[in-house]
Image (cartoon, rainbow over all chains, first blue to last red; front, top):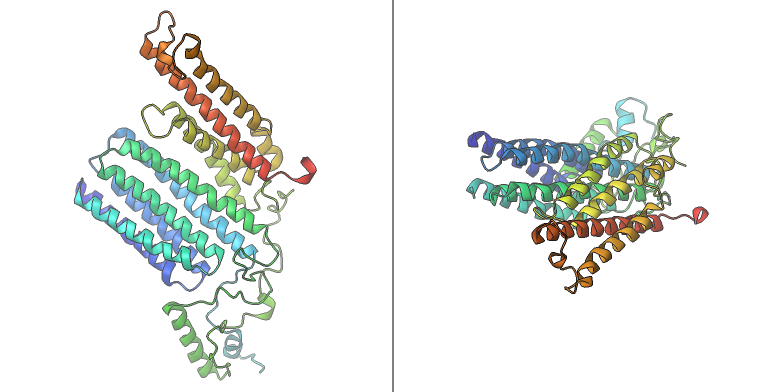
Length: 112
Length: 165
Length: 148
């Protein structure tokens, strides 16, 4: 039981670390927010699912934790969605790696 | 108090400190807000783990639930606030509206961006396009397509724009 | 600046309509449970106010102002303050200190029971006052010229 709990908590910590370091090294806003919305939610599910198996919890605590899990899993991606929608509406462009002129040349319709 | 939970608490605390760098350094206000969303989720995790570590889960889970629901209000309200500000400036003063010049603040940096730039140069050499030399450190990078700069049409679907009174 | 009215994203609208009653009910739980758990009247009032502010931020105005009308902010604030003052002043009528409920003698009830009820009523009063104040702050901040 406690082995399962600790393995799940460890996996959740791994995904938390992934999303936090992605927030540091990703090049632009959209990729950062991608890390926060998806990897963070997966980390929450794993970590709270691990805490559910801890022997310190009794039945009311399990109910409360399930409620926290439901609220967080719904609210966290929605919050990031609202922020990203606002940023897209106010004009933040996604970073493009490939220059448009190169793409045109590779497609054979490049005029210098 | 199990040592594994204490270790997990330490890890999450360090992650909060790391994410606060993005709150401090994020070039636009939206970078800061996304980082704040991550920090608040990490705060919920810290409170839950504290409840397990101190063996008073009922007390701490109530606090965590309140914190999670209050942290949900911030991105909604601020997203609403900045979404309606369509005058081309963010709170930092960087120009950042659609169709206007590339914002000053969001020049991508870091090794992912550097790898992308090297890939760009390699493909330029292969396809014979002469690119201007990236001597300027503030070089905004590749030029986006002229007709594709920003949303020209409203982003709302046909059933989704009626609500703004 | 339009801070009230329907949010232009359907995802946010649906999620806030789903979550705000639960947040408000959690606030009622915090108010009623303040003896044993964290919180009390102040925090619970803030949660109920969040449950009222989220519909104002995201739902259409005719809907959100039907759930919690504009007059409910001043009314709840006034009623809460009045409740707190009345229950707080009641022990002074029998010669005890302010908020010393145990001194009030109600026939058929032990002093501890009276104190318990007094604390509960005062918590409800504080919660109502905080809820009304939060809602009034939001309404004043988002007031437009045409509905002044």
